[in-house]
Image (cartoon, rainbow, N blue to C red; front, side):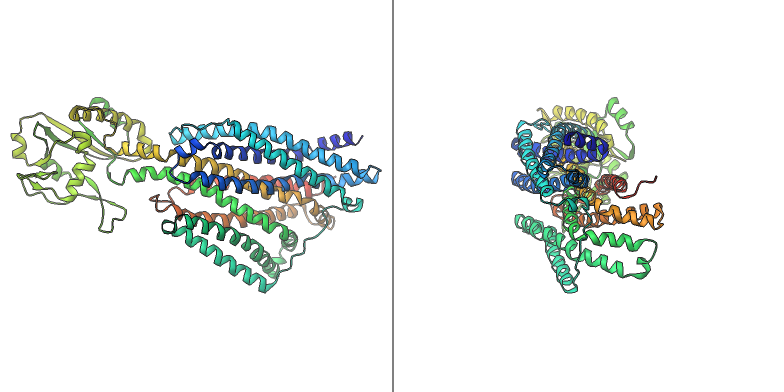
Length: 618
């Protein structure tokens, strides 16, 4: 009979259970996605720029496992919130406590097993979908990655079965130890938060000191190296929790004491709601802030690596492409690109060397990347050095003058007249008179800059294949690297693709999980607020004001960890400043993705919270 009543109740609350299944499924899917990388040692070590990457993944597995345990206990406590009052009614009608605890155990475990099966399927699907999408959008392939990894499935199944057994036992035990009266009035206890000025001061002071040390370690990571990573971890994590444990209750107390704010509308009720639950929420908010920092940080680093490939490939190239002896196909490819600057120079090839016409170079000088004495990031500048002599050489030559540095850079790096194109041939720049004396066919080289280098990759690839054939003719050997900006870009992308993939892949996974922790904590404690909202409704408070109060209350709870997590990420990106030229390049992309995911969780939480706490109109 009780089983039938339970099934009937579950059908009645199907939408609430669907939310629980969704949250558990996401948790399992993300845990599995992480394990597909963490346990694939060959793939990770072969596709990473970080030598100690497996150690990082082992630490990450431990952190994720700890967070998952924390998350699952909060998620499954949602079942208690939904069912404990009903269980109390069953006991009032004569049901035995042993039968009630048995029902709670099997109900929790049953939902866990269903979510485990669905979660692994979803995890495999997400692994395939996200990996394919990343490879397609970022235009690279990651060799050795497997979306279906047997050891990852086994690890996930064993971990979650043990976890669901534990949570089922805990849920059943908690129901069994409570009295009928306690169950019938479940969730009506208030969290009293004692805010001491002295404790708050020292708590905030220690938080600032710890986070400050952690930030210093991240900024100076190039000098501190491994010690810096450890120092940042052991200071920022406790510092973050201290911010929420010490500062947040005090901050809300001060808001509550602001009469102008407190007495406006039902702000007094909204702020009171936050204070009632703050004792339990502080640790949850700290956890969410750290998850945001981990997820958004991983994604930001991955995207920053990707966008810095083009910047790094431009370190020695102010121009985007040099086309020697252009064919019709080359000209068509060039025409298909959005060219912002174009130059054409002439040269002749003999057995003695390569001779460029000085007049054309001086009349239309190209841009070069110029370095200063401190070897800071180069800046593009036009070559302005005069060439008064009749002949110059890139190499030491008794019959020619030494070429000025900027012109040497222009010929060798920009026009690509170097070993990659012409092998060991000598390179000369001569005036019109000497140029006319050379008995050889005249060739052209087109130097161009485009508006969007990445958008023109397909055209640049076609051009580079043609340039490789020309280089093979002059060098007399197969050529894989033409020395162009395009080949530098491809080489850098190949080197960094694995790290980019892992960063974005894990970043998306962590961001999908982080708000679920907060969502289920809020929903699991929503039952305690039903009578408060019901009372306000009965004394005449408009439903629209109650809805507005919910939006504000939950917005603040979502806002606090988001701000702390974002600050951690912005400062933390300094860790990559010694290997990434511009670590903040396109940082708005991961932040936008974060706000979309976080915003969706906020709206879902508000909707579900309203369904639980607002009285239904008859």
